[in-house]
Length: 206
Image (cartoon, rainbow, N blue to C red; front, side, top):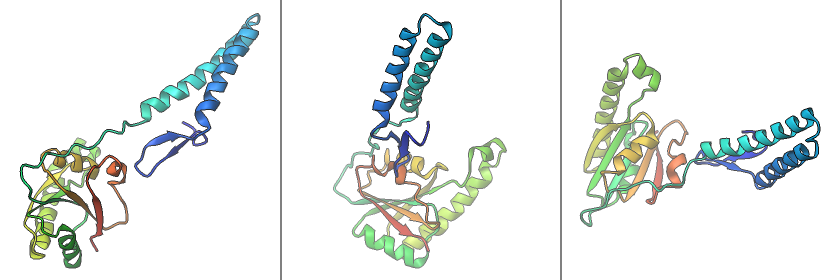
């Protein structure tokens, strides 16, 4: 889809610009009208229908690429305890761990999830075990830092996509808040933030 007609938002969703849909509808109608007007000539009719088909295909392609605004599922809490989910794409320094502790406040359960640092190609090359071992080592060090900051920590490794790891964990963990630990300036949870019904905070791991 042409960037002239579409734009992306901070969550990674593709949207038509305000003028795009009326323009595409006009092009389709004009192409059909031209095809009817030139129906006496084989070339004219074929050209008009081709332009109309191209515009219609653009609408279909957009619909296929647009993602539904479905709210991220969060498990229902069984009690009044406060729970915080930490997605750690980087290992926290002691200072970062203290910042997480400040945000967690009176939380009685802090769950840390470390995404496995791998991609689909790694799995094809049978490198998943090595990547999982690396994630488990990072989990142990990160959990240790948060425990040293006074937090009651449990943890696991998750999907290589931090956003997917978040969604997977929230199905079973009734978090009241999410904290993203990142150290490279990137924000892998931006694409799901708009669908998240609980607060999302960010802490630099540096």
